[in-house]
Length: 126
Image 1 (cartoon, rainbow, N blue to C red):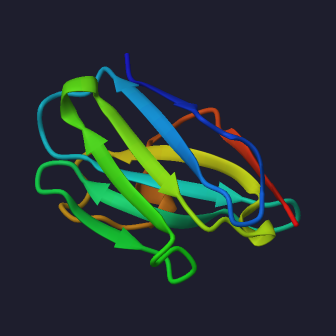
Image 2 (image 1 turned 180 degrees about the vertical axis):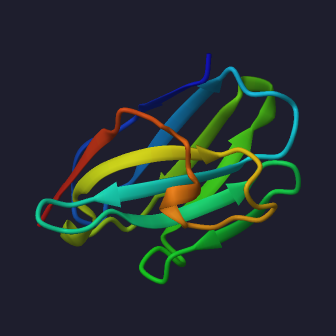
Image 3 (image 1 turned 90 degrees about the vertical axis):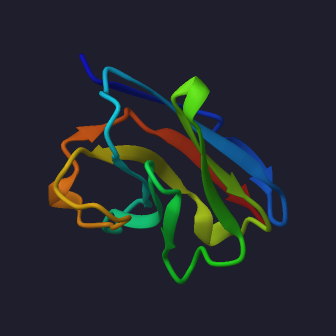
């Protein structure tokens, strides 16, 4: 049974940092596109960072470049999102998601992600 469990959200002031974790279970040994998405109230869900697990190739949304970094620890079956220089505009529910086999590179096409975590809230105050 596949599971994705996020943790690490919280409330921080602008300029602060958070590290989100997504612990996975139930996947095989093949490559997977793991991605972080976020959804703010009244806005559509958007992808912010993605990684293809077999080669560590990454992709970032323009809003994330230079401030957010996605990484993985294969031994722990965990994907991380390090968020620095946080801004109030980063306030959202953050979700990790997994695409198993539809593509062999990092991407944000949401309909291809069959597995989703429950989300973790990030709140950035000014």
